[in-house]
Image (cartoon, rainbow, N blue to C red; front, side, top):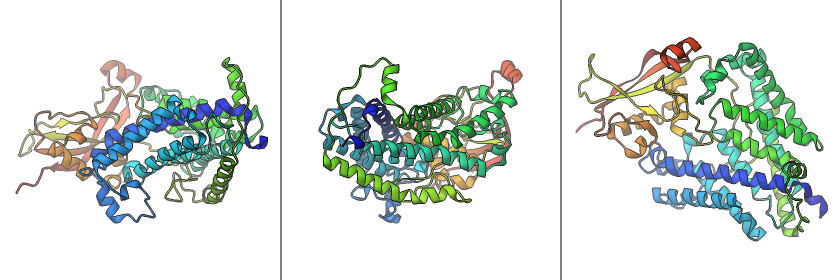
Length: 476
């Protein structure tokens, strides 16, 4: 079955599998470290309450059989261990069927987490990881040649990620069409990184070039992924360079890194091995008939499910980051169809004063990633996902985005909940919880070169209004 395997793609498969395992590892560790405060039994949006109202067909998950924080932690840490093993190459040392089961368990565990994660897991890169993880089940291991069909499906996934993002921009905010969106984006993106200030301060003509290059990378280059070599490798290389540019300019969890991993499915593995001076690969192992049948069945399934994202891409009412089934297979993607012109941040403060007044001292809670202290340099966290910080960005855009969870968040600050406080960088009340908590909305902007030199502040902020009046726990 020579037609079935891509003999020159052994290194491409290796890079894809190891890279995907690394992303899985980060995702499971992120879940294990953050879930108790977010969706645990005493979390802001508890899983048991969600499962009591969500139909099983819309949220298939292992947690319908049983839920407890211990069981969730067991699933998350099991996923992390399996991902670490795959990253170390253990899945290549077991029989093919066992390797497929290995990747299938990773996918099922993470699907179970995403489907109970509610708004905390409502990001496009969750679906992207699940769709990539499903395809990885059929990539095989060192005991069989890389299946051409699965590598093609990964290119198709990468095409939808890039082309969908390009289309949503051209159909959305007019600043993408007049090449001015990057006048604002680096400053107003969800979580700026340590270089975002410098990207924002680039000359405006360079911002226009940057925007135009983005359009080429997302609307033209993806078609090259399906061309013969070396064109496909060149297209993949351009995708990788573009994604690394995005990594340098901001924090988007594992979205950019996973896109880089997928791009290697289009790279000529033999040419890559020669470039890095690796020894030639031995003969391609034979392909079991049962494995070929499963790969063909998976390909047919993806082909059928592709109808919905293709129709969405062609629609004037294109939607981004949407799953058309509960298993997050063959989704539609996109990012920043609109760009904020101003940055609004919710600043949360507490006080020990039982009767707040004009002279009350309010102390600010510090978040790990989102802007707060104007003198604190933005940090690089990606591929780690700070879920609370990301949702705080949405809360600054509109209180409607925070209606479900912001009240429970404030309540847990008033209780001094340890799991919630672990999500923060700084708790100004280490000895006892505050008597009152309030939130205020500020307009943030990057400082100028002159302001940075004079004050050492990366941000300048201006109070806009009260976001939440002082709140206290109800006492009997």
